[in-house]
Image (cartoon, rainbow, N blue to C red; front, side, top):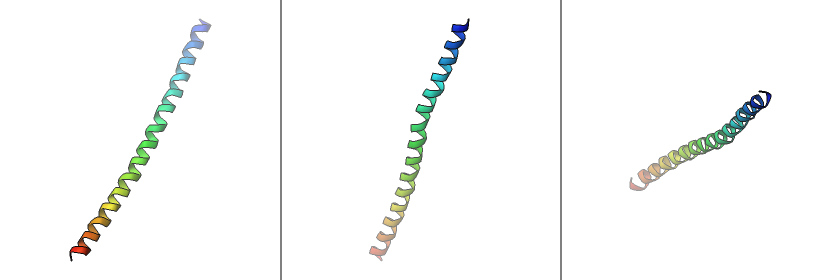
Length: 56
């Protein structure tokens, strides 16, 4: 019984560690994507402005 209980605890600890390892890159990728998106939006805005200035 004691061994079984310890195995259960080990399993949940490993599971929590795995979840931490998996969720960290996901959060990092999400943050990076947001930065890239805002940068792309800014670049598109600048391109539209420069095109408008060139054509006028």
